[in-house]
Length: 376
Ligand SMILES: Nc1ncnc2c1ncn2[C@@H]1O[C@H](COP(=O)(O)OP(=O)(O)O)[C@@H](O)[C@H]1O
Ligand SMILES: CC(C)(COP(=O)(O)O)[C@@H](O)C(=O)NCCC(=O)O
Image: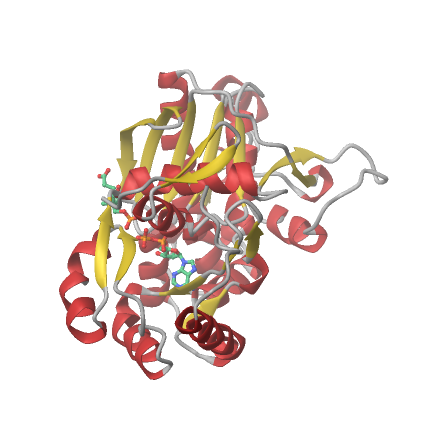
């Protein structure tokens, strides 16, 4: 078994000092996000994991930051995955002297996710209908109220859900939906058995790209803050806008008046489509459009592959309670309670985590972690 708790040589100790010094100051760096609350210690590996992210478009700034803080010293190779592991391999080698051990994107994703699920207590959570006012909630009371309002076809405030940590179930198969720039849908059949069965071009990049076009927000975090305050019924055509209050016809159609009939459809019928709209409303409607589409792709694939559990991961879900709650509600609603949407604390980091583990040949066997002798 890998023993990182063994005494370090001086070079390693100095490299660690540099890293911790850097990590302490990182909060103040505008181009990166240091997810301090996601750090965890792995007893079996004898070391701590820390998570820092940069947008790909800021790669040059990331490399400069690594160089000026001397973080690249003593690092010859690094596990890497995704398109960037191919696109940026040469420049990393040239500028930082670090070689990329390229790992397959989906293998890394599944390996990282399974490692976190079996190592980090409280990694997985779901949303359940709130039982009564005394029901213990783990977190997000405030988000719950915000995320539930104005959703059109989602839960409303009187139907609040509670966010509950749940223990990891190792039952296969399950669906894994990763929402990064685009969306990939995987069917996972075992620890090393998975297949990409579907995908969608309408993903986190669609939301973030259109937000940059339609509003003046400068960060994804600010997009979420805007969306929380928006009213999508000013942008989306609701079923009731088309049918009026004809409850008999709606009953026959099987749709409620307050659900969305067409995302952004209300703008067609206005002389000036932008009149009376705020950036908040646009943010909310855009978030709903992308989320609903992903939910449908996920649900239909889960139905096709007969997998009652759907794990949703990827950075699009970061601090994004609106989409998480909406996906939970939609999967439960469409499947009539037969399927469950599950979420993970380290949602955006599984590819990176898995690439590290795979590049070090670290694998879980018989309840412990092992590092195999040779690197690939
Ligand atoms: N701080 C952030 N900056 C930019 N995008 C973010 C941020 N946090 C979350 N996102 C969302 O995450 C998406 C990228 O997800 P990620 O999992 O990093 O994708 P990829 O696998 O393509 O690198 C963005 O398109 C955006 O919707
Ligand atoms: C090409 C990708 C696997 C890249 O992954 P990402 O960087 O988006 O996480 C992903 O964007 C994707 O699956 N897009 C959808 C392609 C499609 O199914 O049509």
